[in-house]
Length: 499
View (cartoon, rainbow, N blue to C red):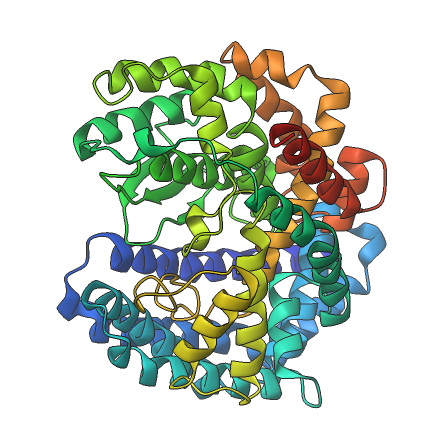
């Protein structure tokens, strides 16, 4: 065995152990969100802290750094996957080694406890149960960021952790474009007559919705032997491996399409992970290129496919057959216009395609202020209500429908919200390229969505984290990332829909 082969073998063995720690933590998080008893939260948080400390010890010593240096000194002898793994690990290690193991373990414990407190607070509509935990999360996240990247702005650290290379300057430019181009269109549409969507808010029993969910997953081509579906207070997807993906949804008996769009959104995440090349299985590269690229796929299936006229033609007969009483007399065209109704709402996950990014901007502005200590957790609900009034023109009747609606901050996901907006832009550009290659509307209308997925899998999914988001856009579209494609798509679609 050559020296390079020996280093590679040692490196892969450490990666397998790290992946085992990650899978254990992911399973615990999924369990906590779906079926764990409420009393288990404190013990589970301590276990997460121990796992985090052990992983930190595994890679933060000088031996691992020497191993990576040895590999990267022989980069010409490494295959593409091993080289990319070593480069990614080197960047992560440079930051991780600056964070004391006890601080990282404490951060994992705090977020575990905060996540449980958020669920209880939302259930009881009592923000006071969550406020001290939220303060602790942002305080801990600030300490981790300052330790990992001394001298940097703490928000910049967490933003880069979710979307490598993304900066506030670039985001501010993107959000300014949204405000300048889309807000006037929203204002003009607000003066138009809204399509009737009352039939979506009749009573749709949960058991029938569950059956419909399985139909949607089947149409998407999601492999039931590798992907499962459960219920959670806030829909999300956990990736254990490319052979074990866990989706969740939430059923509202008086809002049937909330679940449908959750399945499409989380199904987009699932298809990304299920489409990763088998060569990457067990590797830290066996996941999406970034949070924004992951959201590009979930938002693509939810909106670009799910709110299309072609998908309405496919799904409405199935929905009407499942709920014949509720949809008696409703036409497919009425359904299509109802799911594309533009009206500012309280909840981000139920927002229409046009106003969605305004919800993201609210969270972006708040989390920046929270991590910098410019806003306290006690002041946060009032700031939330103020920004909802300014950006969306809506009143917030309760904290459950306001600051407690999202699970992200309690779980430690700081700097993640902007990736939803970035995902919208990435997804629109990728889908525009897809439609230059395929007659996507005809395929979708005919129920051949897996053929659309196959195009995405070949150009995006299979690569995992081998490429940067920019690299994947270039690979799929043959051009640089351009958010104006997303803006132009929305302006054309909704100008046409609302005359």
